[in-house]
Image 1 (spheres, rainbow, N blue to C red):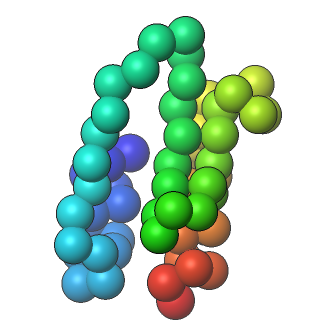
Image 2 (image 1 turned 45 degrees about the vertical axis):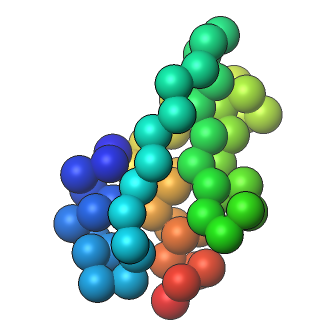
Image 3 (image 1 turned 90 degrees about the horizontal axis):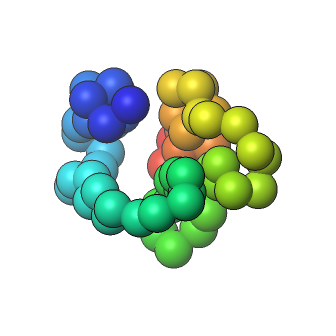
Length: 59
């Protein structure tokens, strides 16, 4: 996921921060906006679950 996002958006984002957590929480955020939450959907993210909203956000 991270390598895909960095590859696609390498010229539009400065970096990615991974924050370890517990309980199966997986969230993707950008500019303090929640783009994807496994906790909310109950499903592990596929690439497009994160990349699609990120494309919309940063163009």
